[in-house]
Length: 231
Image 1 (cartoon, rainbow, N blue to C red):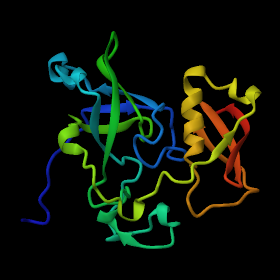
Image 2: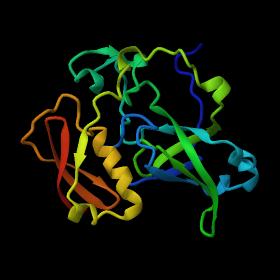
Image 3: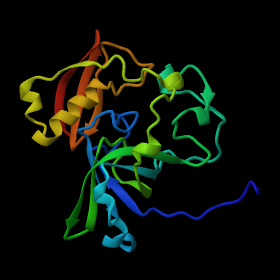
């Protein structure tokens, strides 16, 4: 095969989430089930017929582009955050965005297919791990009889859900967060949004979420929210 062989693809949709930047986004889809997003199709793909039957599925696959991580060339090895950023692994053994083709894959829960006056049919999905306005290349139904492998091995990523943080957020600060976003925010913090190689109990970390800037510290297995301000 010609190594320069190329295939033309286009974004069929964009997803809108509460994350304007990558810091704070869960490392994988499904880790924070309360995190929702809206998939808005491009005008030429706003066809009710194209979504017919999708509402019968509980989950869908989103294929998307690491649009904020595009770069020239690629490296055969990367430093996964899961390993502290100090050990190199093969790029195809990781979910790193720095790949020959910057394509991401997420399994998300389909909350519903909703009709809107402005955008036609949109998809409300949950358990997202995507930045706001990420281009979507395709939507496919999740097939549990084929896509779920009960005895699959997790490789060096096994146990990624171990060691969730306890979260402490003063009530007066939590009240600044819209009620329908509070559970999602606490889930993001519990999953420890810091890079794995950063463990400074004195450092004040921060990320933007739902139009707010969340400031927190982490020490002794607990994330403590220190400030919440308008972004």
